[in-house]
Length: 257
Image (cartoon, rainbow, N blue to C red; front, side, top):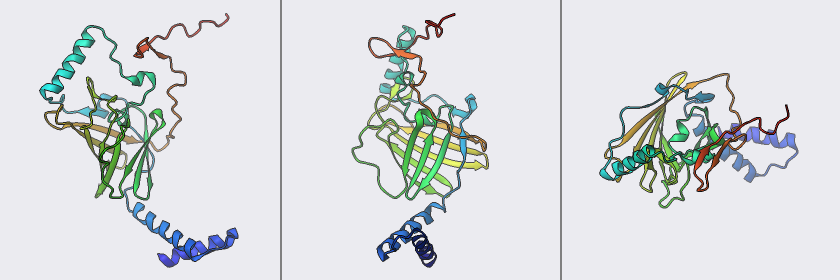
């Protein structure tokens, strides 16, 4: 491999007219070696659609909650009964965050870099970066909508651990992420056109036991990722307190007959 990499390096240098130094040659060999690991990973190329049916986004049962978690959900449900506006800020084009970003009815795509799996998500044109270079999770992460993720391969399964999700993110209805909320995903291609993301959520103060969600994806060979700019043509608004509202009004108001 080394001699082959050097051969191509010197050929490229000769064609470009750039003087090839030993240091540059060694750098080229190092880059080639880095990508050798990438080529051994499972091929998940293509566009994966989560679908829109309830069967594509499954959960076995409602989460089993601690008394503190149940208190949060009870307060949320009581607010709904009173008619309170309890929409999340996603209605104002704020990203859904984990785990919702993986469970919306818009496609995803995987790309690989040395030491990193990138998950491109059409929703909000988001990117999740999963570091598989052996680094640990950060000890004191800055909150982020999708959190901070590290992973490793177990055969053809990508195991992803995520922490540091922004507390504004709704994990399940009525419950927001805390500094102790952790996600473990097991992403596996179970058939040529089928990918499964099993998401396990833990938070000792809220969940009495791990809560598992399953997201299914179908390969769509003829699809392309599209640009998603939520704010463009967004007809949602915010009330005086900044809460999401839905006021479509008259789309033809002000137009001449």
